[in-house]
Length: 475
Image (tube, rainbow, N blue to C red; front, side):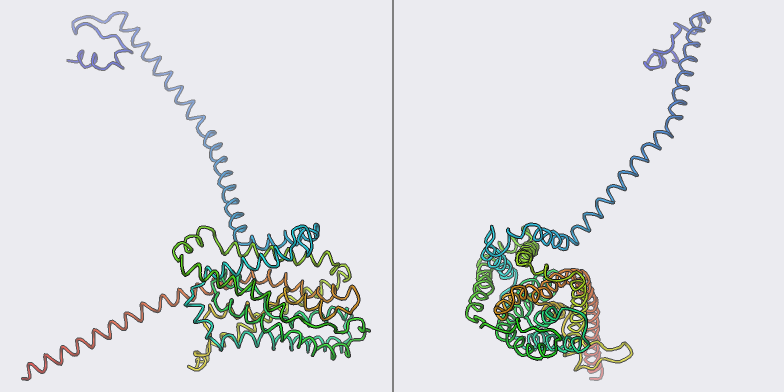
């Protein structure tokens, strides 16, 4: 029995010799087999011991490599997240650097003929994408929101220009040691309408009401054709009387070509918007798929960067910054940043009408308040200023001035344009979170209201059943 078991185990049979029968006596072969087994077991134990001694070192090496790889992967993930979040600001720095080094490429009359390829092409792309993205019904409803449009245009073309005008007059009276042309340029920058494209792009990225931003971008620039020259002409006399310097070389001259500006706005803003709406109306499903696949919102941001590249190429080529000292540029940059933040907060307050927590909000205040999405549109359309109309306006109104006058007067507007893009894109993340938090609160409130409505309906039904039963019993 034992012999058959040993013979069936081939692995053990290779290590030992099986005796032929139980009656045989032990011999030398048994001693040899026992020695061989003991030697094999000792060798295995030595091998296992040596492997156990080497295991900690291998484990340490593996853990070190894995920790290094995990640290590198975490760093890579964080870098990609930051790049995805702030790629527009990095792109902004890149195009400004590119314009400063190679202004002949994207300037007016340069290698790529930016007056057509960018000044028209990039704007057309932005508003064509807006036409493809916006629902026609929403756009039609937005046109009728007169109170919202009135608030935005009053902030942008009345409150801000007159506030800046009064502040600059005070600086002149205080005889601040700054270039008077720069301060006049600040007033001109404040008198221009809202931007044509960047406010729409940033409102969309911040989950705001894109339709409201689009309507007020177009409306503001149409009004600005008439309002901005009138504001600058009105402010011009008091500013020149208050300045301590001789500004006779920068007197107003020239006439604004209203027809040309209206034509450009119609072809670059209105026509692409209508074409985009028509395409969306006919190919609704295909447009929705293309919008997700091609990331059209990012395409709009890239088109905006290309426009900034062209604007700064023109500024560098014309020597706008060379006639201004570094100290004055820093001061104007600080003033512009304070202005933009203050204007954005003013828009926020006027749109939301906030009250302290210990004061109960009256119903009429709740009715006057705009939604968070509308507030985002008010902030971006109210606080931003356009270079597209500001620089040509300066060229026309000051065409009889000294050659360096236009460059100095344009500097505050160019700096404000860059700063509003930087600060506006920082606001995008904050406002997006604010809007999404509001939607979460609304989603939490709706189920509660539905439950209360259902419970009230059930209680009414039970009451009716009780009344019916009571009547039946009474009968």
